[in-house]
Image 1 (tube, rainbow, N blue to C red):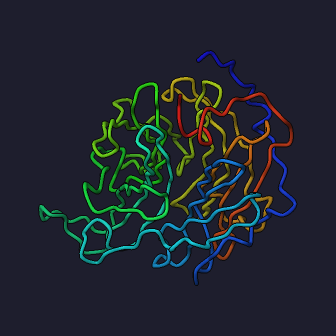
Image 2: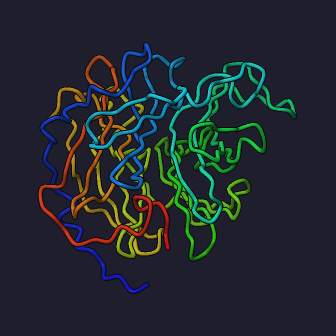
Length: 333
């Protein structure tokens, strides 16, 4: 498919939606806040969002809502949370964070990727101590409402020094050209102590091959974590927080990166500065974006000074030329 490359300049400057600073219609389910949006466009201008209520951690489990206008989000006919921890299962006995939703047309199946975490004192089936470790798992569904995560999990665990003891924040695409899943995720490098971005591929979504060039994006003096990747106009686009996680001056701004091959990434700089908005005065967090009517619609989660999570809604200030291949840029045709 010969699609001209988009000029990314239009995707670097945003205005706050007048009703989206932050969004108040997203259910919290007795939690103090909400974080980690992942937005997926459907037919006839309907949209889905998965996210997690947070804090506290015991409420941090994947939830799903839907909307027709990207402002008012509803949960009728949905049984939230979609998944819950199980004290008897070693890899998901604490909480289930970082949901990422994908529909694969060829499979006629929904995939919900997420990051479960183990409690202190947990051991895996081989007797190894996996206390407080983060993994990546997947649940599948035929209808996008009822999900099953009962087998073959976790699908990704830390296994290299640059992954430390946690792999987190999956963002997954389906590449119809290559008939494979492509996952981007973050981890904390044992040597530098910094969070970095990695890539893995899979044919079936269960067995994954980590890219030998990992980490793909890293900074000597900053962290980069919780990527959100889409494919527009023959290019990969990534909105991602960059800043410092494990420090007294914890902060993060949303940056844009682009790539032609999904491996070599170019920074386009900061697009959302967290300090301009009281509801993310502490840090910006995971974002999600879709291309709609020649504008980028960007959903950004962040934490205020009290550590409460919020989700805000931004729109690119100008229109641009870019082509959304399928399902919000999550399917590469």
